[in-house]
Image (cartoon, rainbow, N blue to C red):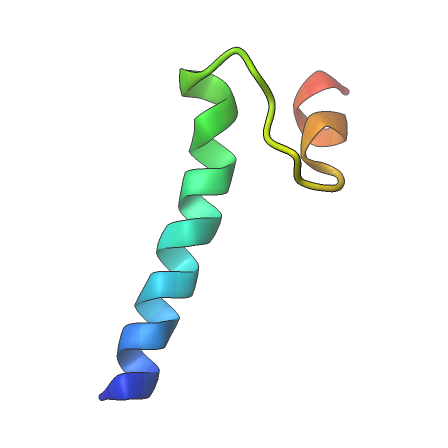
Length: 39
């Protein structure tokens, strides 16, 4: 149960990292994120 909750939390964080450049003009301080979205 705890492992399932952790998996959902990780998936949510990754989804948030992927969506946030679309909502906010300022890119996140995540290695490779700005390369993916600008390139």
